[in-house]
Length: 97
Image (cartoon, rainbow, N blue to C red; front, side):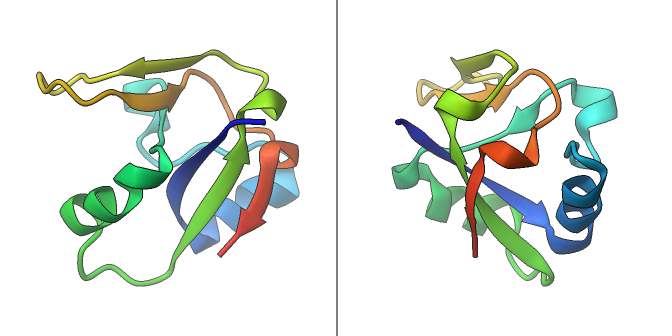
């Protein structure tokens, strides 16, 4: 089992969980779900979500993800981030904190 993480809006996550598939707000324009490895979560939270409230951290079992996961850096850096190219099945989420 390999684990990745996704920072989500609590309301959006709850709606996706109930519907049976989760897509963050930017999914329609980007086509993937931004995720992080454990050692990347704090930096991502500080850089992209500082000062925001109503967020949850999804712990995702990559073995349960049904869409491709690509490790890439689309901003020109060297550090690779996991991106899920499709909707997230709530069954792949093993913890929400």
